[in-house]
Figure 1 (cartoon, helix red, strand yellow):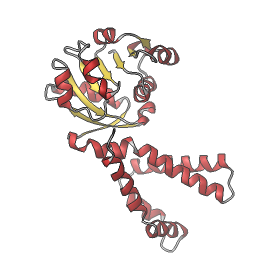
Figure 2 (cartoon, rainbow, N blue to C red; figure 1 turned 120 degrees about the vertical axis):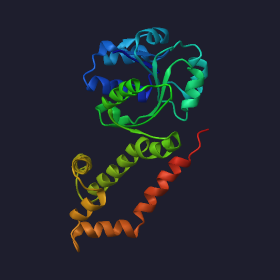
Figure 3 (cartoon, rainbow, N blue to C red; figure 1 turned 90 degrees about the horizontal axis):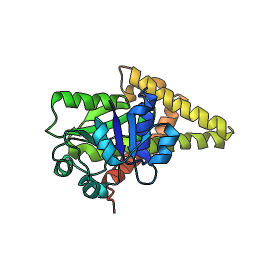
Figure 4 (cartoon, rainbow, N blue to C red; figure 1 turned 90 degrees about the vertical axis):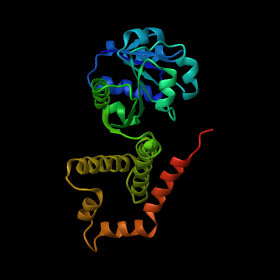
Length: 255
């Protein structure tokens, strides 16, 4: 199977890296972009091509250019019978079906962790896809991580949690790092401890049959130092701060 990317920005690059990480042969990955495809292809040892070649050769075509280019670029592409996966923000299935009326269109919202096979992606399918085509799409995304099939009305909150969430988690890791430095650790040690702690805790949660609150309370003994820290979070309205950040992300209007 050949995978073609029209657009070579950060998300396309992350997905391409994820495919390579998953063991997909680089000769089966194509990328098109007027300014950066050649450099990206050389760096990742994939195939640079024009969009027409991608449309002809690739079984799955991922459109990853700027959303405002959809109609200009889309009208120049013949994607008849192709599975087309869009990563374009705020572009709906209805938009895709209008621009690509003979393609099998999928709206997706991946995150940057796709580069190491740990991505989280929201999916919505055009009614044109049959069960076999949906399975092909799911298999593609499972190379890059996990998926959630959602109504399009829920894409904004998914984006806030899964799309913006990595930045928020990194903010927390940086705060842990700075706290370590403030208490005498060198910067490199503090950063390594904070990152490995978050990574290990995430894996523990994912492999458990429990939820975050239960595991948190298992760690925090009554009257202990961890409980003192959690109590301080509550006193400073930690949950309110996180919820406010998520709401700001959901309600942000692009100009």
